[in-house]
Image (cartoon, rainbow, N blue to C red; front, side, top):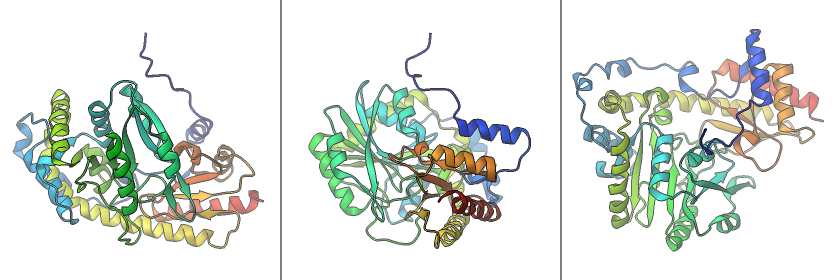
Length: 391
């Protein structure tokens, strides 16, 4: 009766089940997985509500790429970061997830492949399967910092590879693409007519400056590349449902891609008029939210690294940006057992590395977004648990 796309397990895992039981009986949980900016005590400026007091939201103009005013606002966002992006290269979507769906439709036939990093956010396989596309992983490896395993990436490229996805910075590792990495990637893609897709939703959240980093692929001039971002992360406004695709590469490739993308978007017309009308104000007001998030994540990361600085049993891995941190812990038990112990015995919720397709154990993933008191108490309990159980 149902499509074969739904061939993944729908049962709940042990951690989810244990968490539900805790919440049913009212046990207070220190949630170190919270990554929803609207749930962590940030101050949202009143200008966000005022942005919707506009009579234009009552008029419907079905423009496939989005309104010119909204696309100009996105172009101004890039200009303020030193990158020239014309509105004619920006196509609005309802979310980054929808942007991926559009690009998989654009680039791949059923049965084709896209390459995605591992570890990374566990979404790509679901999005690809919905488009009848296969996902193959290429690993990121850690040696004091995260890098692409180039030999494995080269081996993963096959005759049906249509795109290489990079998450920049990666979620959850927080590692940025470097300029020499981009050169190697564009060389690989050019030789095999493969597109580059760069997910840049966390690009504004770097911990410190590094001129070697690539902040965006929106200014790539060769081959074909796509930069994805949106209000969800860069303005802390996931509820507004506005993302975008910037088409980059050679002029001919851009033209061919744009014509087809616009046709796809015209089929769905998913982006709401109110959020497009409000986009210039939302991007401006979002700077205030972004400042709070930067301060929060930086202070929480400082507390985390300070707390684990003298602990030999666990290590906070280097993180360059984003909203997450990774802790390597003793392999005396599985990640699932560690997370269940922390939840059952310490009322602390963290995520296991296998949620993000880490290829070995044992790693725990923490969000850096929770309020200070929650984060500090949770980290203190986490350290105590590792000290008592990790030897």
